[in-house]
Image (cartoon, rainbow, N blue to C red; front, side, top):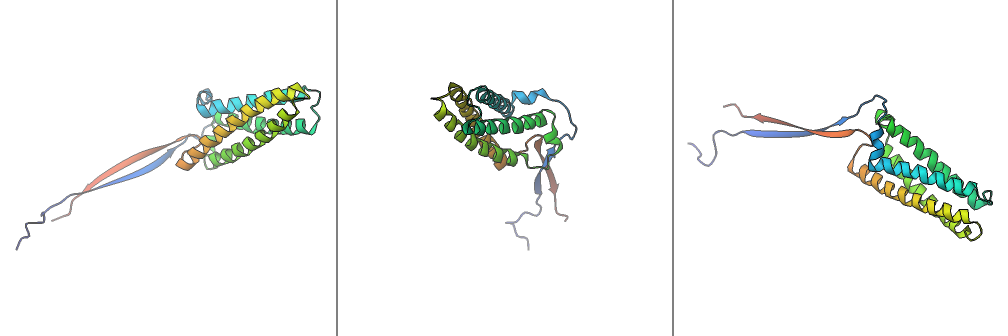
Length: 181
């Protein structure tokens, strides 16, 4: 007896999606990173940190505790961000892609946002005595915004599973199988 409700043959299609990570482990200079948003943010953070540092250093009260704290924050941001910028420009980040760069940068940016908030607030409070502290505070608050926005971008990228440098490329493989009769 033949069951007419069931087909005698059928085809099963299986689609498998895999993600491959494409990185080039060669060190090479690529200035196009500066034209991206993260690259622009890093360049602006380095410049703002340096300008704030110069403002405090040339003031008459550069050896005060507020000036020392601001300069510590500014130089910490300048060197760490400057080194990361060089790493991105020469694709060293891509060479060492096993290191969780996005999480490291996220944590650093969050800490430096808080540090710049504190250092700039202390500097602006002291600006009534030394005008250079007010200018440094302006650069510090601008740097704080740049680090805060960069932290947000790093958080979003880390959450989505993106790479710091390099790319994920999805590959679909379709296979068709039919049962043997």
